[in-house]
Length: 414
Image 1 (cartoon, rainbow, N blue to C red):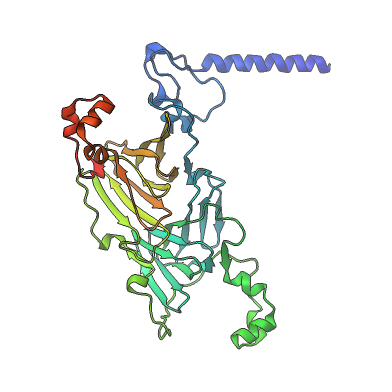
Image 2: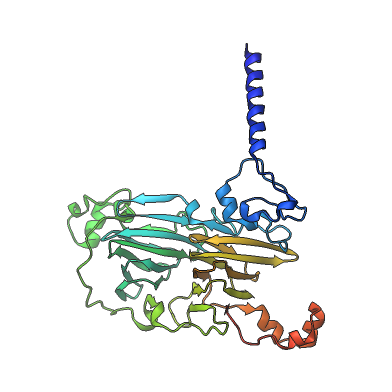
């Protein structure tokens, strides 16, 4: 009986497989390229349909993973991670989802998170062993911070506003509107390891009460209701109190923890393809370990071919659809497709471009570098400032072409 059942199961399995194969797409050379239909077929004799298990939606979103770009070559590791693939931690008053080195091993310098706070919700008082950088992209928040000199800053931030807390600076964040959301960036890829974040209630809960009483000059009973474990995010009412008379005064000027992106002019963009804001220690002096750009690229525009000599490039795509080919040296290059919520890490000194693939929608993204400044070397400018006959002979292009290359950075090209 057992043998009979096994044979019946085998026959059924084969029948189901036969049905599946019969239903599989019958496409080939005569049908032209099938990458945008989710099939690895170039229409010129290379490739074949996928008959096994696959996630069709992911295939459709990533045609370049199916070898759409014929110039891709060699072995390039995955350089992309979507926040949608991260585990979301839901809490009273909001949520958070992270991308750390175990999610994106190619990101050696940077970890990041999206965080959401409802009105009044507080990311509890804490500090880090690493620097924290953030940008608001929905709603508004209240930040509060104190440095080692006792300088303090309490300030409201809205869309596009940025903060930077050097490692060790005590701080907290509170949501001010109904729904508030922001990107957090840390200059440590393995952000989740023990000893990175220190929450004040954790510390107080694990300190003898008699010590607490002596330290604060109050009765031990004051600390009877300190939460354990730490709530991380907690519901509260919007703060109405102000801070005054600090012995070292407020953190202002070069000591300010806040940078208001759109209160400053964007960088010059000769290529006229959008807007490019640079935020680093040259205009935000306190930000010594994280440099950033905020970029808006117009439909079908191009972030010109370039590389970064001083750091890996970590990216967060906030809006739109993009394509980028990353050249990592030798003959190795790979093309990636990006959508809103995707992150990426391009190796330092790797050549790349970023293209807005939409006909109608702006592409908006943020670039992050573990550095005190943003630095890039464009391919066109390099070639234009090299003797033109050397360029022409090296690339086997007409001398007239080499002589007309633009000497000024284009940055974004329309």
